[in-house]
Length: 273
Image 1 (spheres, one colour):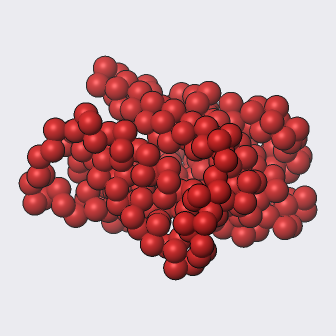
Image 2 (spheres, rainbow, N blue to C red):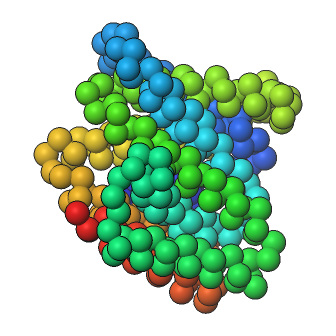
């Protein structure tokens, strides 16, 4: 959880060096792809997996990291982004109900509603008037992560290394195209990345995207998802502590109250079977 929580303050440190957010995300996904290639036993998946694999790769590899970096680039306060990322759980429940026809209990609906109330409180915090665009990007990031979770349900029989390798190359190439078309001077910015920034990027790609996420998948083999996910929902606590240590950032009162509501709702959602 400590590594998961570091993703946001470390990402902010990287983007503070003036590295464009789309290019940074492309590099991160490229490193994930290169690290997994030596361990991959390539096998073309069955046709029934093509659509969910593409959906997972674009929503996770492209959407999540695109909007995460755009949010961090726009934000002056990181903690609301860390808290807002937790909306992925309520979004996943909504998507499952609306498009997959899954039955959701009244208790879960109440908690979903409560989580969004918490986000609205954060959005109305007068200290965050200049952060609205960052919050919008955060909501889009959470939505993409929720879509990735839904798509991943159809990929349980595929090797995790295969899905993540495909996600890495898909995210790398699509984000690189976006960077070239939208940000421009991508080669110039790439050539001017300094050593300390490379270390931070490697932390994001290897420790967060590979070690932390792969560890979660490893735990799923031995423990039910319902036992693992409540601990994952606590990563914002570690992230907020790290933003305080790195940036001296203390969440405003309304953000703090909204954050407690969001985190409490999401934690409770994942405890319900």
